[in-house]
Length: 341
Ligand code: TYM
Image 1 (cartoon, rainbow, N blue to C red):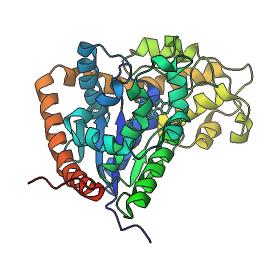
Image 2 (image 1 turned 90 degrees about the vertical axis):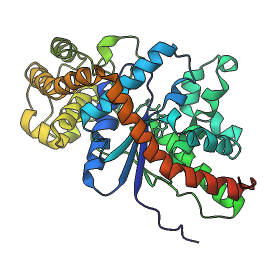
Image 3 (image 1 turned 180 degrees about the vertical axis):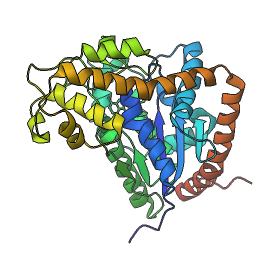
Image 4 (image 1 turned 30 degrees about the vertical axis):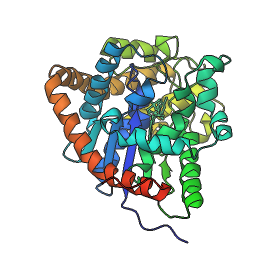
């Protein structure tokens, strides 16, 4: 039976665990803004604070990081008049559906998640139960809105496949066509921004070397220095995109340039092919500073008025609850919970 038509709706989230990188901007938030502006979807974006506490967070830091992330979304172009922007914990339906989905997802499925294996490492006995159940809560974030599309970076692909499996198993177990089979949206040149020190590793806030990443809080000098020192090979930039094959670091810098400039890698190669990195890197640094500095400045401005930020988030949560509450009620009814009088 074909699935019923769902309203085109986007949900995505970012963990407020501190340290926002250029990867979060190019791989996620800049795409969220594009999708908001496309006018083709209802858009909901959140700070996944419940996910953040699956590993230890100092409470004061968590509060700060959650507001900072809200400021980042807004500074990058998320418009509260067009998108719901909210803290996950302010919409209790996420956790409530999360419980139901914990009962649908299988231990074996969760155990295969590479993020679980990476984060729990060899010491999984000591990892939190929440870290293991993380992807089921992520599925709930998406399915509580019947979201049809989820923009993310490449590293979240496996979690989105699991979300589809969980939705399909729920529909099958209860004989309903209730949850949509969500489409991941992993598009653009920056779905996997790599470390500046090692082109085989993702740019990550948890990398021990600060030189490996560009933080959204870096000033112009720091950004320029990190790009100048970024690892490259001795060859000039190739004359064709195919020439980037096997040159992970060169490819990464070209992709970053392309994403920042809003063009394809072929345009970057057309402009810089044959040139040395000594010529390319200053241009890349200039572009990066041009893009990042206004966002950082606006984040500072927004962070100075916490009451206003909190007001925007309260408004976003109220809007989100308006969508989530009836879907949770239907879910409970399907599962067999008594109706609340
Ligand atoms: P998180 O907080 O690790 O990352 C947030 C978003 O940034 C993207 N990203 C990158 N993209 C390209 N290159 C990089 N180097 C890079 N680093 C991070 C991530 O792919 C992600 O899109 N589990 C999620 C948060 C989450 C979520 C959700 C996402 C919770 N519930 C529901 C979508 C829908 C996470 O940990 O993202």
